[in-house]
Image (cartoon, rainbow, N blue to C red; front, side):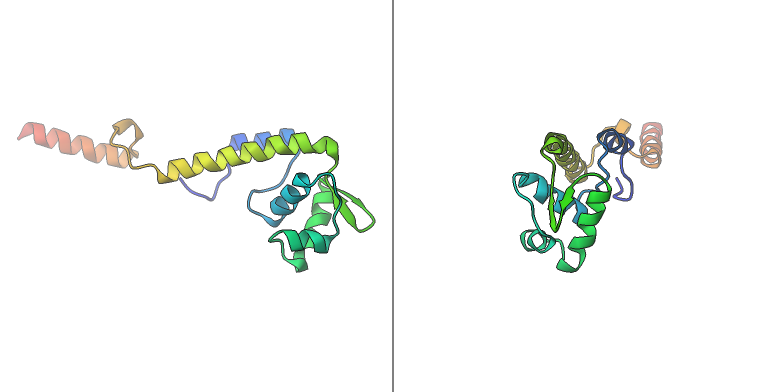
Length: 135
């Protein structure tokens, strides 16, 4: 499995949820922080201090989240609207489950079931079996 693609189901779910944040990005981290602290509003430097989002990037990240309609800005403070918290919590849980699924697939031992072997390997295995039987 490659890390280059995003599953179609994930893209469709994001579109339905209207959340355009890729896991593991600065946007993701800032949004998760604000959603986890939805009873407070934060200045960019406070978000940077509480997350791994670089202080040099945090302002732009928060502006993008605001442009995407995911956070609200009042003056110098950013926060997640309480109405969005439940939706975002569901999205984050879906992403965690997706991450777990990918980890499980990547760390699973190779299967000897020919239904799960890549076509070239299945052909090689079949040729080997036929060769053994004809000896």
